[in-house]
Length: 337
Figure 1 (tube, rainbow, N blue to C red):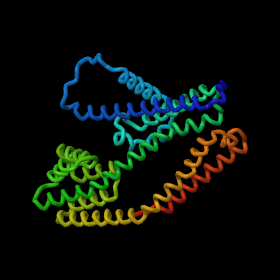
Figure 2 (spheres, helix red, strand yellow; figure 1 turned 90 degrees about the vertical axis):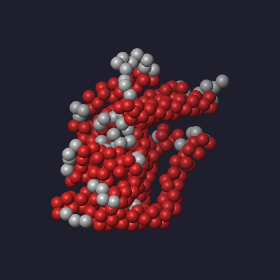
Figure 3 (spheres, rainbow, N blue to C red; figure 1 turned 180 degrees about the vertical axis):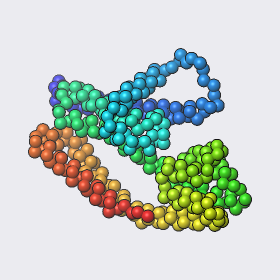
Figure 4 (tube, one colour; figure 1 turned 90 degrees about the horizontal axis):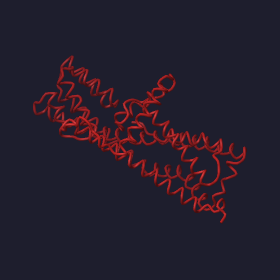
């Protein structure tokens, strides 16, 4: 039997390895969900003094967090990495509550990139081959930036949910003012009537007002946390009302009307540009689908691109051309309101 030439058993083993990695990622995701749920109910429960019944998975996660702290202590000495990690502070505590700051998230990205490299080395070893030097950098980059794609997607879902629920919050506050309630009561009503990110933000605002902070300060902190144009307008309006006085019902009615018209316009734009976005999305995927299809039919078809200098130059030029194409098309299709 030609072990090197017969690639089907090796492809089967690679598929099993891929399935195992997907299962590990799924288990980590489920564990994070259970940790979030445990934090929510922790104030209603009594923790034992000593917990000797930790599972193997808990010990693995504990070891993983220790490794993250060790890498964090090393990377925190670099000014460049510290500045780079600040870009991830907005994702931390919003889409992932495991990490406390952006530097820990960067440490996890380094671990993921190393794991990608080890998987590639193991896969090459099954094929009785060694990992080429030019293959190391792409693997490290993919492992390093893959979490960015996941967290950006989750952060956009969070922002969209926040923007959609903000109009409902303004409507509830306006109705509360019409019924004679105060700002503190209106904020508490929104926190209990709605759910999701907007409810959590209004609970924070209600807690801050309960501890004696000024309304201007509370809404300013709220604006800094979520950074929405509508909230900036709302904060400025409340600040002016607090200093000069005025009819708060008319102001909130005006804000409610403007938000409703903006949301209506956004939905109309999405309906008009929906088909174009689908076409562009398909065009973005066509090159990758073509490469996958050809690789399945003939695994050695694209091998000359990675075994010669001219092929590597052509791959680099194609990637640059594709990135420029994605950026230009995205700029053309982007509609600002």
